[in-house]
Each structure stands twice: as structure tokens, then as C-alpha cells.
Image 1 (cartoon, helix red, strand yellow):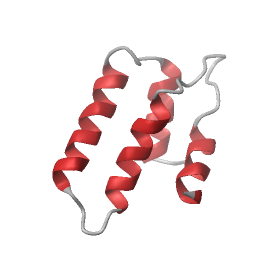
Image 2: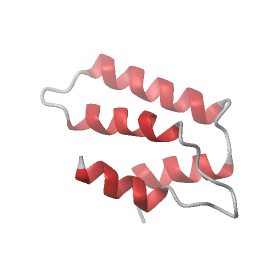
Image 3: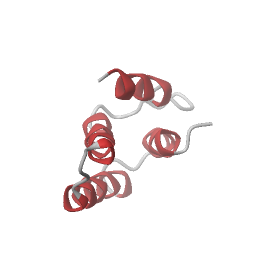
Amino acid sequence: MAGFDQAWLAVSGPRSGELVSNRLRPLLEAVYQQVLAEPIDLAALKQGLLELLTFVGGEGRSNANCWATDLFFCPL
């Protein structure tokens, strides 16, 4: 999926020397695919967002992961 790959490359660089977790990519990709699905499955989208936010709010909470998630949804 070229669109996701381009978006991932734009946000996955290190922040202040800290690397973005490899575990973040599939979580972001799942939400990306769910948003673009036709018809949209709101239950699947909700689950994907829950998993993503649980990760960045818990064990995956780092400056790099939070920046990558933010930039993914709100590009500059």
C-alpha cells in the first residue's frame, strides 16, 4: 500500500535520538486501512484506535512514538 508506506516514512524517523517502535507501524496501518475501507466498519475502526491509543498510552509511550502518531494524523 503505497499511500501508507509514504505516510509511514514521513513520520517514522527518530526524534531527539529516540527511535520509533516497530510495534507502532502495524497499529497505525490497521487504523489507516480501516479509515479507507468501503464501507467503513466502525467497530473495527474503534478497536484499531483503542489498540493504538492503548499502546502509545502504555508500554509504547515514548516521545518518538507520540510524535509519530501525532504527525501521522496531523501532517505538517
